[in-house]
Structures are given as structure tokens and as C-alpha cells.
Image (cartoon, rainbow, N blue to C red; front, side, top):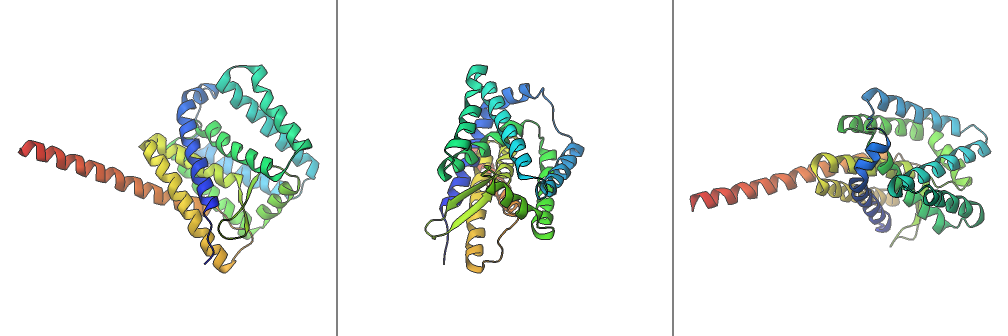
Length: 274
């Protein structure tokens, strides 16, 4: 039986790092965004816009896509660095390094490195905009949209292929271990995993966020075993895997909290009886 330990481990660590970084910069991110939060209506419109963008990407000229994505990535890196360090002359360095590497030295290692950087930066940057309610609505609708665009229209696969051909860091491409294969996971899927773990940590504590990261990693491991055994799809809506992992993480965190409260109550009862 073929299985993979590398991708699930990477997901666990990246999502866990997102949780810790967000909790470190939560106040600054909220101040940077003016304390605004998305409403459920905003979450619906955001998913509709993303679905429309996927369709558009499948048809618009490649050069236009390249310009838009490079500009968006550069702006996000500048904003995040400036928020953290409050020095504009330092904040301009990451975008410059990113663009220089993109045009001059864009090897797979560098490509994957920036995918991982954005996989942490994007959920941390946007996390303050989401409440628990809007996160649930957004995640559910995003999963439905992902299924439609991957399985129904096929536009997600076409858009992903075009963006990878442009060498845009939208897909983590890693070898599997110990299975000798190569697998890719979309940046959007990792972003969703990070966002869900961040919001879980904000609502139920850091431990719950880390448990969510672990559960999503385990769900990825199980999915890969099924994929390698059956080869059932070239493209698969990985948001489904993330959502399954999130649900499992919420269940595990509840069990852990229940266990702690039960032990605590038992200890108090034992002290009172003594």
C-alpha cells in the first residue's frame, strides 16, 4: 500500500505556524484592517467572486493573469512586512526579492518556499476579517464552489494548469515519501486549512487550533492513501478533505476539553470528600 508522510506533515506544520503567527499579530492585523469584519453577505459575495475569477482565469490571456497575481502577491508581502516592522524601507525588500527570484531564479525549491510563505501570510492577513459565523459560511460555500468548478465545469483544473504554466506560486508541488510520486495541493486549500485552524484557536484556544491542524494533516494522509490505491481523479476538490479534517478536529478538541473538565471535577470532588 502506497502512502505519504511528507505532505500531511508539511500541512500540519504550516497550519500550526499560521495559528501561532496570527495570535502574535492579531491586534496589529485588526488595527491594520480598521477593526472591520466580514458579514455573512460579504462571505457569500467573496465566494461568488472567487468562483467567477476561476472561470475568468480559464479564458483570459496569460500575461494579464501574471501581472495581476504578481502585483497582488507583492502588495500582500509589503503590507504584512510593514505591519510587523513599521519600516517601509524594510517592507519593500520582500516584494523585490520575490520578483527578482521569479524572473531570474525560479527553481522548484524557491517556488515551493513562496507557496509556503503565502500559505502562512494569507490566512494571518485575512484572519481578522472573519468571525466564527462568517468562517463557517465561507468554508461551506467555498467547498461547494470548489466541487462545482473541479468536478462540474472543470474550470478549476484549467485555471490551475494555466497558472502553474506561468510559474505562479499557487500550488505546492512536493514528492511523496515513502511512495515515489509527485503530488500538488492548491494554495487556496492550504489557506482554508489555516483560516479554519486560526478561527478555531480564537474561539476554543490554541490547543484546539493545533488539534485542527493535526486532524487536517491526518485527513490528507487518509485521502492520499485512497488516491494512490484507486487513482480516481487527476483533480480533486481538496477543500472537502480540509472540511473533513476540520470537523474531526472540532470533535477531538471537544473530547479533550470534556476530559479535562471531567478530571478537574473528579479532583475537586475528591478534595472535598477528604
